[in-house]
Image (cartoon, rainbow, N blue to C red):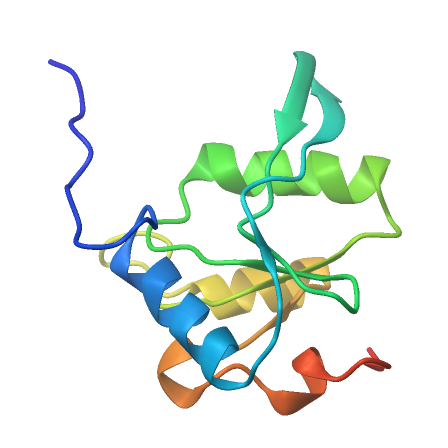
Length: 131
């Protein structure tokens, strides 16, 4: 059985991505959505396509489900591209019934994160964002 992508009334892959885009539009932030390809190696040569590439270099990766394969991929990308400033929006626990959250994973591996429901932090949108 093949996974069928949900159809939305917008161009984004999820409602969370749509929400992030709306926040960026509201702040008048120009961004590139899933157009940049960044090469990395894991088992074979791959390309990582960031969700939102902001003008100040911040990459906003919007995750609904943050599967183990996605987490592994981001650890490989971080090791191979330490200069990339990838940030996440944790929304739930990593495993059903588990205690570790997406935010815990981000803390453990040195990623910044925010909750989209609370808004993308202004510091993430500023031209000279300080980590």
